[in-house]
Length: 342
Image (cartoon, rainbow, N blue to C red; front, side):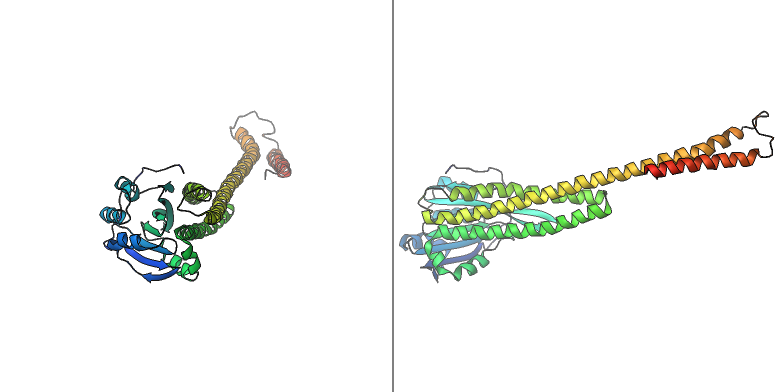
């Protein structure tokens, strides 16, 4: 598998003084003990990876804690930086004896999407995860798998696929919430028209969906690689699990694309409606300007008070002017009304 590492780092990280969320040793799918982090090396040297799994979870650990953890798992020192480094995009790296997967989980706070890192390292007989932030919690994963101990007994590759399933559930939940906002935005754009508030809302939604899309794309590629890779860490029978997850992620990505296109269509439709409304207003203003121009012109000419003007001293001159102005205005109004301008 091609090694791919994103070098960008998170500017600030929260450090947890007690990063251990769970540390459980399973034998034949059933929990038998809760080893201490400092005892991992001894535990791994004694277990049979064919029927035993050490599954540990950590939240916001310090760099020193991760260095000690790498030492306990006998990870080569030159690879420690890869484990400690923070990533901003999904990554998968095959080191031969173990595989590291990085996913970017998402949570919304005050209508803003906040990305959080979730890192998973697994090999024969062990799996540990490191998460940054408060969104993703693996307690529900353990509860789900505790009901099917046969899955845990199969090994870390099956458990890793199940964890990715839960990550996908988080993506789907967020996309469902965005879909509700998209429908509301579409309705408001159609009913309330093209307003600055709606345009800003539309921009925010499309920006959020773009962020999700940039995360889902690499995640799909990761699962598709894991579905075909030949390695000692992932059994051939487990490949189908990753293929199923890849299909789910692909459907999520398609859903996001469809929502983005719906917003684009709503925007274009709103612009067209706004243009039509402006054109109608322009036509009405032009029509009324033409109608009012007739009496204005006639009244302006006769208001210049020249001594020699047609019908100026005639008895029926004034009513005739009134009749002529009304007649011309009525004729113009009829024609504009028939043309659809009024």
